[in-house]
Amino acid sequence: MLPAVVKTLGADHRVAYESAAVSPFLVVRAAGSLGADLVALRHDLGFLIEVKSSKDDLLHFTSSPRLVEQINIIREQCERSGVLPIYAFRLKGVRGDAWRLFTLPDMRINGRTGLLYERLPKIERTAKGNLVLRWKNGMPLARFLDYVKAGPVFTTVAV
Image 1 (cartoon, one colour):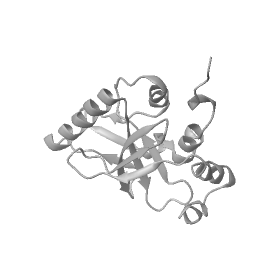
Image 2 (tube, rainbow, N blue to C red):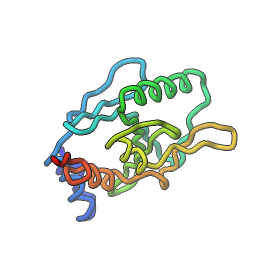
Image 3 (cartoon, rainbow, N blue to C red):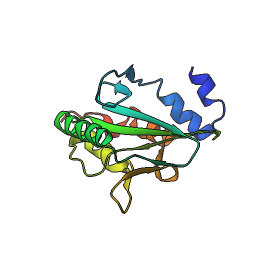
Image 4 (cartoon, rainbow, N blue to C red):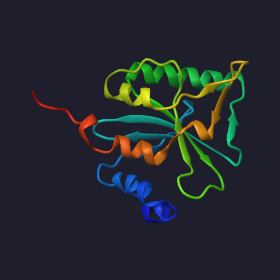
């Protein structure tokens, strides 16, 4: 599957995607009412991932009570467990790295996961308080993969 994904990427992005094979995540399709589509786990990190896809580069979340409840549940559960919620937004029709990543604003996450939380762009709020994803403001998936590859930031050093 990876060769098909990386064939339209530039060399630098291809290396980042291929690094995921060195220290892979176990990815499981999530079922249930939490609203997350995937759970990704590795020895040092865990994420809940909500996947969005659109042909428009601006994705509006509705202000429906159900969506607000889902976001609040995800926020509460992720803060309590130290798991990072990620919103993965794929812009249809883009060649190359079409994925951009975001996380919820105003969360309290500590440790190594907290460092990653600080680096990820936050979902924006409109003047009316609704949440929106602006594809151009997200973190490219290749950059995210490069950051989380096994390396000094995510390695425990014995003292």
